[in-house]
Structures are given as C-alpha cells and as structure tokens.
Amino acid sequence: MGMDWSLREGYAWAEDKEHCEEYGRMLQADPSKVSARAKKRGLPQLGTLGAGNHYAEIQVVDEIYDMHAAKKMGIDRLGQVCLMIHCGSRGLGHQTATDALVQMEKAMKRDKIEVNDRQLACARIHSKEGQDYLKSMAAAANYAWVNRSSMTFLCRQAFAKQFNTTPDDLDMHVIYDVSHNIAKVEEHISFIEYQLDVKYSSMVVLKRIANLELNNVMNILSGIVWRSASRYQIKYTCWSSQ
Image (cartoon, rainbow, N blue to C red; front, side, top):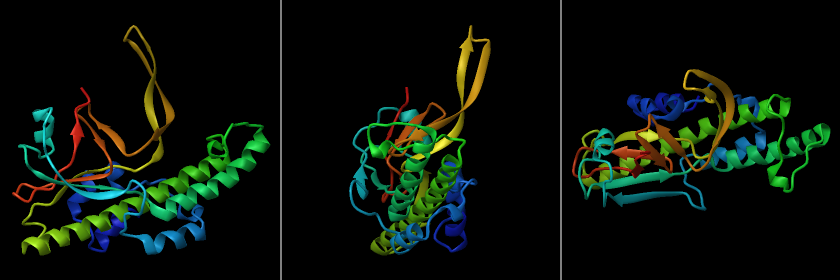
C-alpha cells in the first residue's frame, strides 16, 4: 500500500503523497514475491534509520545557487534550518535483494550468462526471475515510503514537543520524497533524426542514492526533504540541473 497505509493509519498528511515519487506507491508491487524472511526482518525495523550512510540530519542553508528554483521549493533565505532524512527499505529490502541473487544465479546458468562478480548476478528482464524481482523491489520501495513517512511523523512530533506547538503550526510540509535505490521501467528517447523523428523506448533505469531530476529545475539527493515557512524551518539541499 505504500503511503496509502501511512495516510490511513494517521502517520502522514494527505498532502504528503502529492510530494512523493510515484505518489508514494509503486502499483506493480507484489508482496507475495517478498519472502517471509524479508518481511520478518522488516517488520520490527519500521520507522528506523539503520546504519551505514543513513541519517536524519538538521542542516542550515548556507548558500543558494539558483534563487528561482529554491523559492519554488520553499527556500527563500540563508540561515533556514533544514532536516534531511536519508534511508530506505532496511532489512526487508536487503533480504529481498539477497533472495533475488540466489534465483538470478540459477537463471544465469540456464541462460548461459557470465559475470565477473557474484553481486553482478542478473536475469533477463522479461524472464520470470526478472519480473519477480521488479515486483518484489517495488514492494520494498513501498515499505521504504512507509518507513520514511513513519520517521517524518516522529520528527514532526519531536519538533512540536520541543517548540510547544503543533507540526501544522510549524508548517512542516514535505517538499519531496524520492526512492533510495531502485530500478524502474521508464520511457526515454532512444533515437532522434534531424530533431524531427523522435522515437521512445522502454528502458530499465537504475536510480542510485535517491537522485531524481524534476522538470529540468533541480536534482534532489538523499531521501525525503521538508520545508517550513516559520523560523523553525525544515529544508533540504538541492542543486540546479542547469
């Protein structure tokens, strides 16, 4: 269900979905493709960051390179306080990938595919293994949106308690939430001739470390980003794609 679950259970605001990649839910997700072990690992980890390079960090806007783009996202002056959350699908996603590697190694032997490293194990995208992994990965992405929205809820409550007010009064709105690591089937230009004949093809695009470009305006790095119009502003870091 992704963010739909968070909304139903009261952990997210209705507007949060509008500020999430895929509206916080990958429709092709199939929970039946996620192993019981993966689900067991993920259940107690909901609402947690995890180790490694994951973080929930309070930041301050030190420099703005593109004021036009920044204002669209709620950044309008230096010194604004920011909070950035960077995390993904925790043990559920890790186990899902581990399970897929086992199946893909079998598929490689069957299809006579050779790679130099076991972690590069793969399967043809239209094979059963390839389709199963896309569906299970989408389910893991949905879990990740619930995980980040749960942490958003906790952070909103923490700030509200600290400043003795409500998250709404603090204007703690999500700017955008992007996937941590994911592969998606997308339509992209594959051929251009004299700028007249443009052809599109379906491609599998690997998006690594939560990088999403929005309408040639900005690139967002590292997970979920917030803004606030008050002096207790919660912001994010962005770069102009130009």
